[in-house]
Length: 402
Image 1: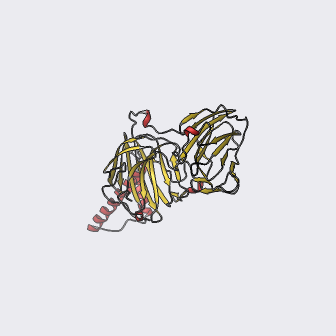
Image 2: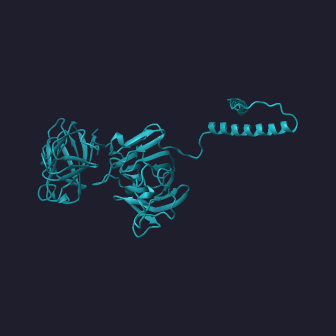
Image 3: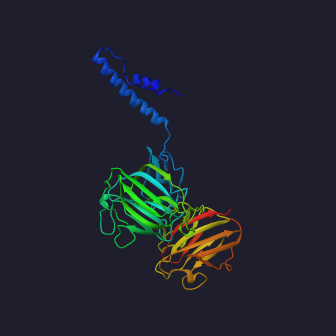
């Protein structure tokens, strides 16, 4: 262990401070100055050697995406440079933590690089995105650039609101579930802003640049993942850290869906990984068929013993779509067949299932469907999407079965 005096002397000499031939009062003042400098350098050394005692740990290490997983965006959406996590804004989607959190305090600095940029931080989120949207069920803390403007419906200064099935009681609401800030404190692009998000026993508060401005209570879920949102704006994040608070009793209904090891097989930017003919288009988070050309698209990857999630919107409501797994065609007809009662004609539908050997299990919009009549074959094969008219697909996830 090197004493602070030894280190201080070495550092002072390194700064070019040398003994001076002062005498009398001059020497007295010289010694006072040297003593003050020594105290400063000793304090710096002590701080460097002393571990952090405030309980915070890095949530982003400034070097790579360790501790994070891309949910429905490609690698190009998120990159690390100069200690910052940089979001391109394309496509719309999320990056989420690998760990779930219940009670915690999160701090982060962020800045938008373009006026009117849009983004968000989601807390207590599910493992994958909700049906028919590129976002998670969660509570969102808005990250909106000032030039976007302020209305009675939203502000650019730190709104908090539940999305896609989550719930929250707002403090300072305006008749809905959105909580509005009591003061405007965010700075415009490209200036940095500091957020402190405190989540404890289903209550949430947001401090913007040092002052708490927005609050919500009675949130559900109140345990889940933290997500960063890509939604068109180029955003920089840095100094992201978290302090985990003790867990408290919680109902199972208030816990978000835990990691099921799903991965997205549609990038949102292009049709890489798919054999597609004319008529199939990558429209951001939507994989669309415009009704022209051959209405079949297939993965280049082969799958065996796997689970899947696929969302589908049946065009004008009168169309028929299909999903092939293990050479078994799931014909999604809203008028006839085993899926008719479970399908929405005009809204988004979620098809979930597993295929193990030749055994196929299915759910449509959360309802179990009898799949006994569907004959799958063993072995590897692609996933195919079928459409007989304009149809949208989204949230195409797969996972290997253990």
